[in-house]
Image (tube, rainbow over all chains, first blue to last red):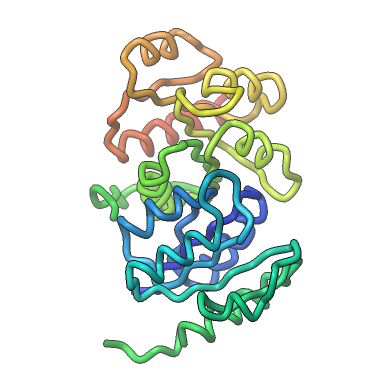
Length: 124
Length: 140
């Protein structure tokens, strides 16, 4: 079974293009446009990796979503992204990896594949 | 995750069509989008009508069928989206769905809004409806 990636991004075309590319590489991709929707998905389904924009509309931003993963002890890896200045990338290290926007989609694919060691992960 | 195994027996006669699913309930959207992908469709997901319009206006995407909930947050609901599509993207087919009986009845009378599916819908009914619409569009 391919790893499940949750892509959380409020820009619909960015979300669609990243998700499409991940699907083309064999990943199962779930999409959410807000922090609240992301948490709903995380609480309902198995997610192997969360790829989340830090700045999202609504009450819960990307950092809140990453902290939810951490607080619940979910075995979900986290990659954060943002095009805006973040206080300190070093401060994000406790939550997960960080890739700055604009990014090459191929770079995101490489990062996710490497992080999950997939498709080369040993079968269990 | 899928509520039922898709009917794959007719998959070979489906050319790759692109479906835009517009639904604000993330879990409902994920289930139907997944099912449609398993049936061989290319699927884009939008959470509301504004996102749907952005996808439809994107030069990078060509949508054949829009499957949209009637009730959505934002300035435009599913009816408004169906009218927008008729005015700006007349070649795109529309299927509306609603869990509210009254909305379903109104939508069913809107020829321009296309056939209506009442929630909860069996996923295979969505596929059947999309096939009907695409076949009808090809004949006309």
